[in-house]
Amino acid sequence: MKIKLIFSLVAVVSSMMVLSAPSKSSSQKFDVAKYDRNMVIPETVVTNGMKWIDGRLLPIEGRAFDNVEHYYDRLPYNVTTNVNGGVRSMKHHTSGMKFVFTTTSKKLMMKWVPYYDRLDMHHMPATGVSGIDVYRYDSANGHWKYVSTGRISNAKGSSLSISWTPGVPCMVNLPLYNGIKSFTLGIDADADIKPYNNRKSGIA
Image 1: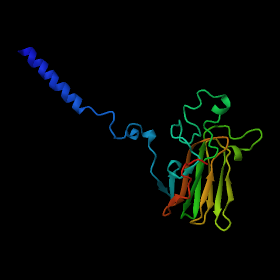
Image 2 (image 1 turned 60 degrees about the vertical axis):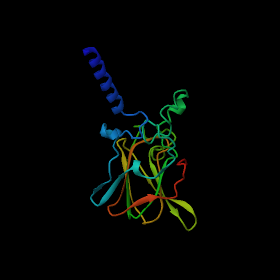
Image 3 (image 1 turned 120 degrees about the vertical axis):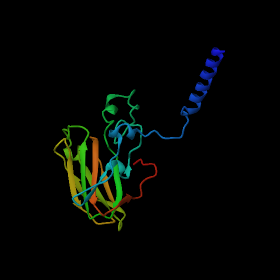
Image 4 (image 1 turned 90 degrees about the vertical axis):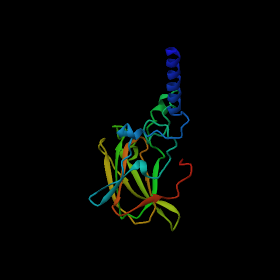
């Protein structure tokens, strides 16, 4: 009788465990940020009258993949397994990536940290390899016009500050033969920012 009772209790407990176990097909999303603070995208921060926005929150074009090692990688983490070294060496480059937006800010400040320490090449200066270019959209003739280049001479990062006409679309081209570890945009504290005619595919 005792043996039957024990088996009955085991069966009841087992059934309760099955009912309470989470389903693998659950629609709930796993929030990695709760367990790894390094995965948290920081909120905007306001300091000295400027609102700083993490680049991962900005409208971006040319970023084709989400399954990457680093947010700004141009290739997926697993695509380089069976390709030559030339392709692998460009894995972290940001060629073709750009931020395109409009803002009500009268001033723009940009800070970025390059992925690689080597900032230039034998045939190309650091401005082309690791710098950024800023353009404004001229609605009168329908063309983008050059505004400024963010120069860089230190692998720890660089910055660029320019005045801006509120409402004029802005385009920031990221480095050609380098990548970036981080990018931050500073705008007036009371200004806002929104995408400007971004391609649906996100591919430039």
